[in-house]
Length: 387
Ligand SMILES: Cc1cc2nc3c(=O)[nH]c(=O)nc-3n(C[C@H](O)[C@H](O)[C@H](O)COP(=O)(O)OP(=O)(O)OC[C@H]3O[C@@H](n4cnc5c(N)ncnc54)[C@H](O)[C@@H]3O)c2cc1C
Image 1 (cartoon, rainbow, N blue to C red):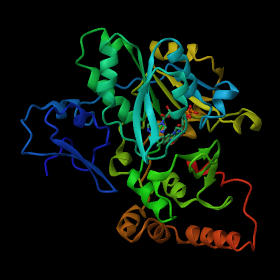
Image 2: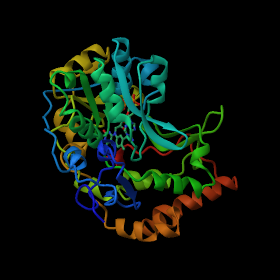
Image 3: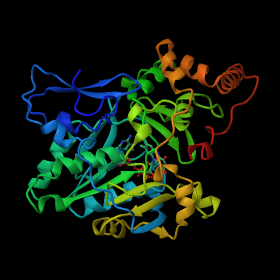
């Protein structure tokens, strides 16, 4: 098997798939690793895939010149996962005549789209704790840039690296209109794991209208069917095992444990995450507070135009609460056990790795269903284990 970059190190950024004129590259997702596999029959050895791959050609990283925590106005903030920094920047960018390219959930998949319509931005809001699929978006961004439009690209650090490599060969000046925001990233599981976990709960992801991974500091899956509101996948107060596996770094694809972007040097103009080390009162923390790192002058423009409330942040505390700013997530020893048992089912695999957690939650779930005990008022608060 010939692959674009070192075996099992593919991030799934899809830049090589987009660049290949011969459609010779396909991404193999084995649950535990991605590989960009080259079809030798179609390949003409032009080298375009290898050149665009951020694993083969590293992108420059810059340390932040400015650190803040902050939040958007309440109407924007309350629809967002954290302080609404991403949504605030998207809104202002579109108001200013620009386009936004970001990730959304549609027909059971986590794709990217581009728009300059303000009423469509809501589709992007919210953290999706899964490896998203940017296939096709880079060419759309390039097309807008070539037409003299400004584009704001928001994505995971590996996806921002991809758009930067994609545009690097463009005529001077065109790339100037590209603005980038990356998310502090813990790591990402294959979306096939999410589909499997849902299927075992009797839910077909393709039939969902929307899915949420958290409500501010409450982490847990909730889904929306038709026009009804969101319903948690496990009863309120019961730990959701998909979220447990995500937050304990159990189920990421192989590449995430050696992520080159989990460092203080950042790939984008602006980096955003959760300000877990914040000293703000609980009333503000409950609504979500964004951590905002700025690396460039373009980033300063994005932040200043966003109209967000900005406050001083304790940098050391912020870093301490977000290890991804120093090093990648560490694979737990049980990761191999998890993937070794995944063939028997998602919940079976988790139960083999964390039997105490799994059976305690299972018991609680059954007691709630039998109305022997009452569920909690909300999903489990996971703030501490997210570090
Ligand atoms: C997989 C993942 C891991 C994360 N790990 C951490 C962490 O360890 N520490 C931390 O502080 N923050 C982490 N974050 C970031 C955090 O969850 C929030 O997404 C971030 O703070 C933005 O919040 P907001 O309120 O500004 O965003 P919102 O206004 O809600 O907008 C969210 C933005 O993120 C984009 N987005 C969401 N999910 C994805 C995805 N899977 N792929 C690409 N783009 C996506 C959306 O398109 C949108 O533009 C992670 C996010 C993701 C998706």
